Length: 162
Image (cartoon, rainbow, N blue to C red; front, side):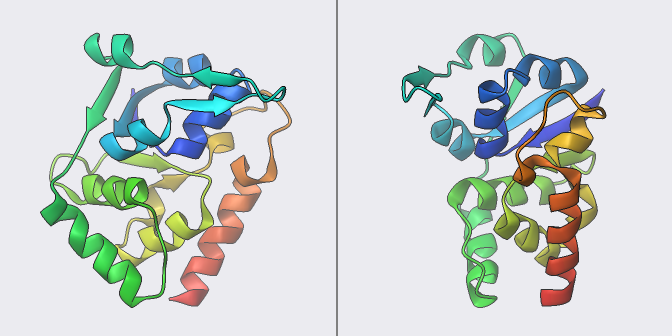
């Protein structure tokens, strides 16, 4: 089973599109502690708050919560800031996790163009995937930011930028 590190947008959109269970069935899901905090709830199409509770999945090892120290995140934030790339703590923590020994088989699923650029700074671009690619088939008409077309454009832009 492939290992997939998800960002907050992927988690929330997967719930919103009712495809989270499909994603969990295809991958061993990893979530950074910062992303877990960012993904506690979302507003549905009717503006009702939907709470997400991962405690049971984490307790039963269906989702792996990963975290790194501030000393591991700080160089990520510094290098991205030096290159005028503004990423969130969850993305910085996810990149730090991917750089750790033992996580070389971990793929990062994101829908954030800036996160894609940041991964290129750390030579991780080949391990960044779109939600569409993870699903391997069309389940729904996905918003552009979740498509392989968006991901390929962002990767090309990242390579050109840096």
